[in-house]
Amino acid sequence: MKLRVLLAIALVGLGTAACVVDWRIGSMLIARETRQALAAPGDFPVERVVLDQAGAPKLVGWVVDRKGSCGAIVLLHGRGANRLALVQRAKLLLDAGYSVVLFDLSGHGESGGAVQGFGYNEGQDAIRIMAFARQRFPGQKLGAAGSSLGAAAFVFATPQASADAYVLEQLYATLRETTAWRMPFHFWRGFQADVLLAQMPLRLGLSADDVRPVDRLGKIGRPLTLLAGSTDPFIDRGQVLAMQNAAAGSQLVWFEGAGHVDLLRYDQPRYRDAVLPFLATKLCRTGAGNG
Image 1 (cartoon, rainbow, N blue to C red):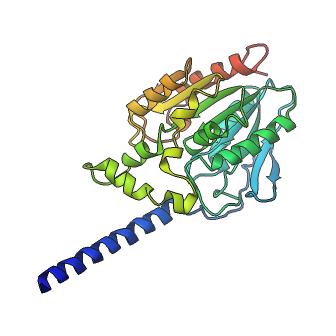
Image 2 (image 1 turned 180 degrees about the horizontal axis):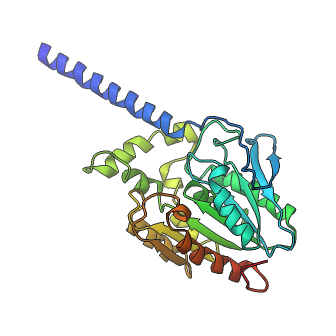
């Protein structure tokens, strides 16, 4: 009898410890990045913009208005980054003839927000940023280029806000799948992911079943290019192909040998060849890449 009691106590203790560890991991995953003042590089003249709206996180960004541009591009960064990570893309697009808009998503950089999410909640950020860009550049076509978290935010912003063309880099198909690929033990990856994601309703007010970009892609209805690393450890080939199939008529560009990294830095010539002609065709009236 004593042995059974001791065993029951041990099992309860192990279960409690596992729950505590799981909760702490969840806390680390959604903890916002440290707030920091961001200074633009000296060779990148920008206008600082703050979007302040009651009941929503303050969003801080930069705008560069290129006179005579053939369109404007909104750029959104990946998880754990900020708008500084977008400067190289912004310069590339400026040189190609576009005005650019770069913002810190909520929970990142100088923007407000207590947590960093997985793109679903940040979709509200993207709606506000896109509305600002439409107002700032009236009559111009608008492009959306997002990486990872930023790509997901653009997807979840639809249909309330939409661009005229999308470049979605390292987008995941479903939160459950990409979380499973991040799990430490190869066996029961799906089960590990489910246990970790079970706390989402309490923390973020949504479930993993809500966070499925693959289900939204087909509803965008705009020209779309997907960029993916062929050896991305978190987004396997099956996820990428499922997204391409979901978005009828979309283009898919593989970066051979690339993991979950900045694809522009990984292979700038391939990035240029994939992105600039696509945007020029969809946004510029003349179809030329230079303004």
